[in-house]
Length: 479
Image 1 (cartoon, rainbow, N blue to C red):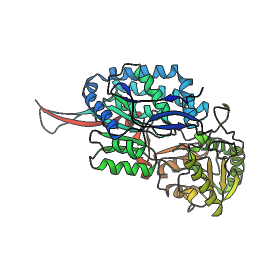
Image 2 (cartoon, helix red, strand yellow; image 1 turned 135 degrees about the vertical axis):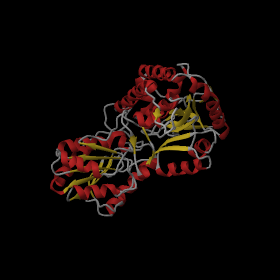
Image 3 (cartoon, rainbow, N blue to C red; image 1 turned 90 degrees about the horizontal axis):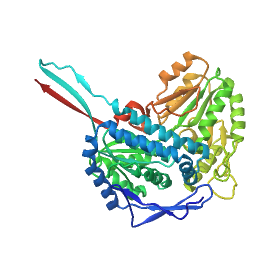
Image 4 (cartoon, helix red, strand yellow; image 1 turned 90 degrees about the vertical axis):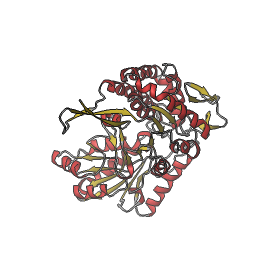
């Protein structure tokens, strides 16, 4: 059922409120109008931040287990409407139905997981040099967290930012991507039903230039958690600098996959293909380039090209069993088209795909494999964010690691080998926040999703991601 008559409202201080201006949201698979959402002005943002600021002290004084109970209640409501929520994600983001349902259920699991930390937040007792003195280190909330979301996993990223923030005693203002705001408002509809105190969670939608800028420049914000592009992350850092606001940034990647000559080639093909076509290649941690050892290069290239060519794609609402949907918008499609054209002009060989898919409407691109790539090519250095896999041949593991590390990015990486010694050597030498061995690139909620170089600052998930939302308070007590 289409939601083309739906108008959403901001959520500020426990109430849904009207805005002065709205923008339209459209389905990237077919161009159909889905909804109208607010374009939040500076005054809207300040009201939300003021509500969060005023609510935070009382929220922080609640026992952590009481704060966590709201997350559990919300998780239950999300599971109860999983299919409806998944459809909202599919229609506004183009994600295939199965993956959208995984995202919704994983979000509920994540809320429950973070709620479990309520009784596990720990400080420290530190030995003193003085007799009769005790030194205590307490973990305390930062205050108000501004969460700025991407469009590629828009539902899960709400929870990834708000769950650890709330359980540690912070309050939150969320700005969804203007490409995919509907699911955030549906999330908020359910959250409004669990009785969370007013002002603890707020949502303001709009674009980055106005709404985002108002959030990141406000002195009421104690931490900005952003997932998105390097360019936007840099602008956020500049905006936050005047107030010395803490930033937590996940800014994309150019994940290398290393396939060695002793690898299980069928396994490597299956895992790399899965990592490449998931969400139409629009995932910051999915494999973006392959370094394959010369002895198995032809076999790997032939098998991955055939596997990519067999990928089914189209409009996920019209074809629920397909493997891949559209790119998010015209800009994303045009970027992929231009990068593939420049790569072939620079000598890369097109093994499969390489064209806009003629499906009549939407932003669809054929699954594509390029061989004969070189490390100086743009396609091997710049994030593609589309269903395109470039391949470069290497002579040995050391060459592959050197080329993999020669990147502005440092989020995720992967290695395919049957040798434990070679796998461990690669893990010691490869300079990335995550390395996957003989499996697709997809992190666990109990890990720590963090990168290096231009892939970001700080991280998310697990104990270390939880503590990103806290500060220390050291007390020296003489008795």
